[in-house]
Length: 187
Image 1 (cartoon, rainbow, N blue to C red):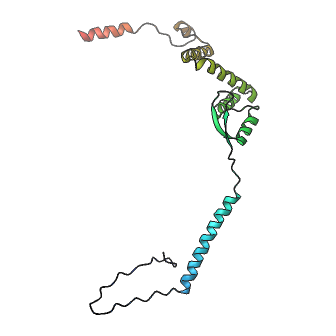
Image 2 (cartoon, rainbow, N blue to C red):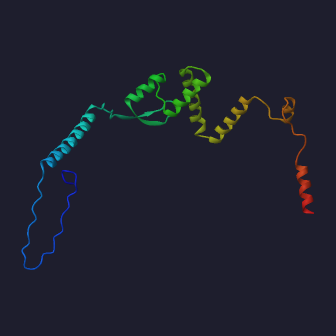
Image 3 (spheres, rainbow, N blue to C red):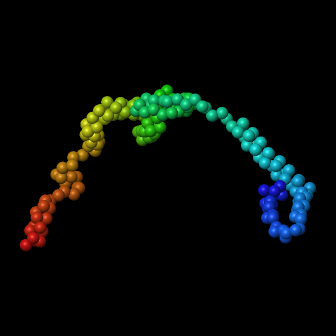
């Protein structure tokens, strides 16, 4: 691009008749205005680059030390800076917990209106039990979870008990009606 912003156009050589000497075109004269504009553009570019370099120099230094931290609940490891590990330890009673366990502990503390310490102890117990039983025998862990669900529910699922509580009870089996319909359609 030419200094004044116009694109430089190269002229194609003209066809010269035979016998005539070819004349050289006069070089284009650069005006003072064009030179000043070019210098202004260059000064602006240098100023922009200097501002970028200054801004980069003013940014806080990023901690380049990244360590693997092991969660004290579930045992998962994450790459974290030392500053992040320090903040997590401050929040969770000196223990480092991963993001997933931190969310579970915070949720448990909010739900049961207990302290972070109590919620953390409960979560560590659940994770410890899972690591002992769940990883070695997943079917047993699933059975145990279903047992806990039924225990928390505290109600029986029998039709007689639900009839006493005002719920819907089954009066008879629907299999006889289905069998009767099938027999009629086959005849």
